Image (cartoon, rainbow, N blue to C red):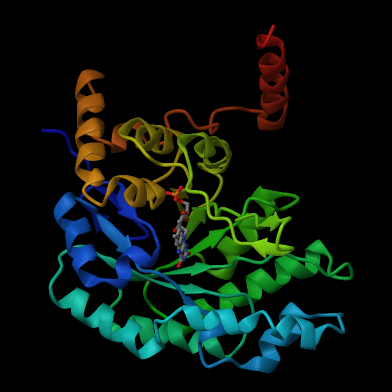
Length: 330
Ligand SMILES: Cc1cc2nc3c(=O)[nH]c(=O)nc-3n(C[C@H](O)[C@H](O)[C@H](O)COP(=O)(O)O)c2cc1C
C-alpha cells in the first residue's frame, strides 16, 4: 500500500491533490464530487476585494496611485457585479460544506489593498474554513510606482490578513518579481504559511472588427508547469512556508514532477474543467502506479528529490542549463 499522505501548512492531507480556486466550487455538489473523486482539499472560489464592502478610498488609493484617471478607471467596475457570490452566501457555503465533508476546505480572498475588506478573513475563519488562501493579483501600470513600494504593499497586506486569523494562510502570487527568492522571503516574514505559485496572467485580446478588448481565458496545458517547477526547485529548502504549485497540473506525471521539484501539494483547475471533476481519480491512480513501478513507498520519499537544494551555485547551474538547452537544438 503506497502512502500518499502529506502535510500542507499543518493540514493533514490524504494525498497531494488540491482542487484549486474556481467557480466550480460555487456549487456544493461539485465539492462533494471532488471529495468523492479523491481530492485531498478544496480551495473555494475567491471573494474579491472589489465585490466586498468596498472601502473605496483604500482601494482607489492603491489602484490609482499617482494617476488622475479615477473616472475612467471606475467604469470598469460594473462588471464586478457578474461575481454573484455575496459574502454572506460565501460564509453559508463554508458552513454547509464543512458540515458534510471530511476534507479541509480553504477559503479564498482576492485583493490588493490593505483596507477594511480584509475583515472577511476572520469571517471565513469563523465560518469554519480550515485555512485561507490570499490571492494578490496586481498588474502595476503606474510609472511612478517602484518595485520596492510594490513589494512593501504585498508584505503589509499579508501581515494585516495574518493578524486577523489563527488558521494557516497561503499566499498566491505571480512569478514577475525582480528577485523571486528575496521577495518570497519577505512574504514569509510577513506571516505566510504557504506560497501558491503561480497565478496565470490572463492576457486580453483585441477584437479588430468591433474595436473591443476581449477577455480571453485559455485553459492551461502541462507546458505551463515548467516555470513553476523551476521556482519550486530553487526555493525548496530556502524558505519555511510550504510550496503549492498551481498552473499546468493535468496528469499523474505532472503531480510527480511538482513533488519532486519541492511542492507539498499540486493544484488543479483547468484539468477539472476540461475533463470533469472525476479526472482526479485517474490522476491519483497514475501517481500510485508511478510510485509502485519505481519502488517508492510514499509520496514523501520523492519530496524535493529533483530540487536545487544541493546545488551550490544555483545561478551558475541555471546558466549552464540555459547554454546546454540552446546547444541541444542543433
Ligand atoms: C475559470 C477559472 C476561474 C478561476 N477562479 C479563480 C478564483 O476565483 N480565485 C483564484 O485565486 N484563482 C482562480 N482561478 C485560477 C486557478 O485557481 C488556478 O490557479 C489557475 O487556473 C492555474 O491552474 P490550472 O493550470 O490548473 O488551471 C480560476 C481559474 C479558472 C480557469
